[in-house]
Length: 283
Image (tube, rainbow, N blue to C red; front, side):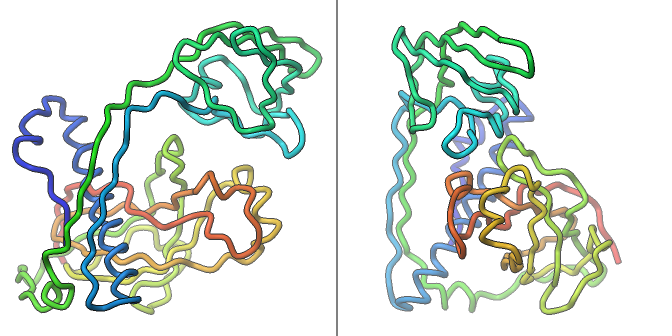
């Protein structure tokens, strides 16, 4: 069961970059829905999968800082956030932080509204830095996704597989750098269908078809310094992928920022296909 955008939606997009992003969005949704269905069918094989997701217009947002636990020392600034726009840097210490004239403790969860007046004093090395600006909330339209399970998984799997030319192929790759602004970081492929790979194997040529990959994360230590205290030997995670001819599939590790302070056994990342590109391929 895959989600495909309607033709009317595709026709509304004019920018080539927007069309590429829409294609990536479709693939991401398809992958997530496929996994949701698989997990639900493992619990109840005959279950109908129906759910509804709604995103209202966002009226609040976090500032975009990760602080050292029980401290106001900045560990990380989220790329593209208001904190980055204001010029706050990793290593800064926040001495005072006021929103609309009121003191705010950033060690606690705080949400900001568009137009909030921010005034802060920072210590950067031996220098005091004063910040005064307005919080800007990106405009995110409301959307809704409804999924109704009208196809049985066993019926899906029994459908005839498409036939491809004998010399057709595609690539699975960890060579290209993922976008850290989307919390996606490098990864390596440990195994393909139980076949162990070498560390240097970063672009793999395969025949069209379904593959089971075992992926290892290579998320920078600075992003996961706390959680790695409890997860010292992180095991590879599984990623199912369907390779089509003349396609490149870029693999990365999606870091779940909400789990950065989690304890042992927490899944703080997931393997993802972060981009699919057209590329001629022949054996």
